Image (cartoon, rainbow, N blue to C red; front, side, top):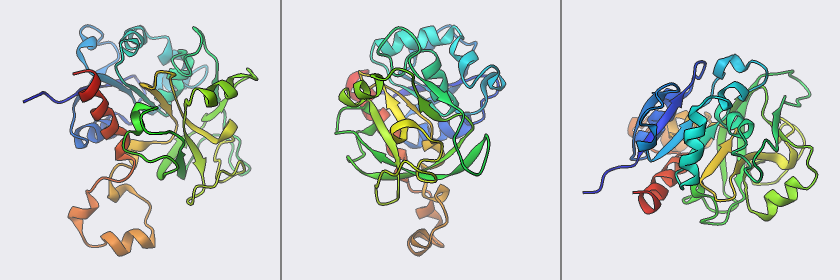
Length: 271
């Protein structure tokens, strides 16, 4: 019997979503472990990596930049170049951008995750949003079970989540390369650049970007916080379908497909 994919959830000082990320990994049918940032010896034995959310090193200087300078990212980058999947969520997404793995078209930092633009709140903002999948099947390894144009509910929780760049040609390159994975949208899939549909002012309503090879993804919303039915907003639709059914509440929600896709990819390409 083939072994399960084994995923390392990399914990940095200040992270706070490592437990939820590991639970999603296990629920998707993988093995996994929370690995401290300074446990670098032997980390290459893992089949994939998740850098979770939080405030690594208190986000001093700017979000994710100190994490991105840690030597463990040198190992993760090398393993990603060998095809292994890397998922950066929120603070992890910020670190992937700061180390240049996303968008990964040059050997330097090409983007930033700037402070939110919000007409009501200055700084940290948390709410439920909807993200629309822009990917054709097979382009990004994290969308193997998500249909193109499918809309998924996920929460955001960040102060610096606005994808921006000074490179005027970069956005067109990302679109051409099909690197934009999820975009903020309305529940019915309409792309509206204004708040609250776009909760932080990100250019092109970008919520997630993958590498050109598709095996590295930086996503600002939290799929691990929306992977089970019980985690979703308390809507009338949810109540009518699942109210009073504890077993049904533990069923996977659409965001779980991010982790199930990771599993499928590892089984097909790494193991």
